[in-house]
Image (cartoon, rainbow, N blue to C red; front, side, top):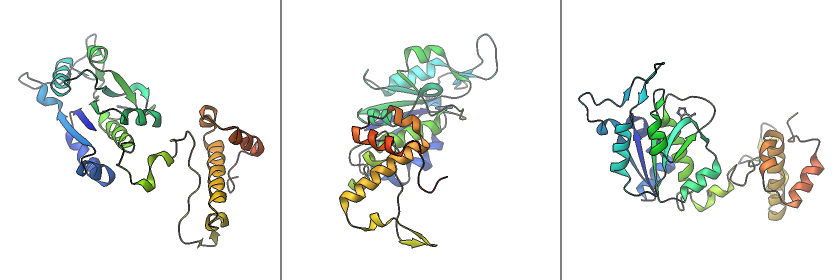
Length: 248
Ligand code: ADE
């Protein structure tokens, strides 16, 4: 997969993209991330990428010309999604991460200042994404979050043992409780079933835990999830005590 990022602050990306799984994915040629400095596409004497808003108001607005120039120089085809990170965008989620990972190429524009000239939004950008209902200092951190979540879905990026399909949200539900050694810690024991070696019983326990946890923490997800009849029956059974064991 090929990802271009247009940003005023390419330095912000250097740490997060050069560690851990994203670093390995790039070394193995599964992911190419190319950073483009927006200022390189601003040709006026002062290389201005922003200006005061027409009609007045606080803050600055990103000018359209450098953005158009940058995108047109970078993405030669019409199929590449041109994604603007902005708090006004559609809320990013796991389903979008998965869908974006199926594309061969993505281009991100990191928004800044008070916003982006409307002509760039209307005629250049194909999608606007937001991380959530809060305002970051710019789109850079948001782009890194989206890139990270997308990369997990690229075949080969994660090892077979930790495939993204088992993650919380991948199935529409939260993952259940997890334990590792020691079997007893400060008097708290790992549930016996997990040490029983009985695979079917373990799978059933994990499935129940996932449903219980989702019901207690994120009932909104259950409402949207594509649940089996068996899951529906289990939830009926534990209702109204939609509580995880140990939480009061
Ligand atoms: N830029 C500033 N705030 C943002 C947000 N919440 N999501 C995406 N991009 C942003």
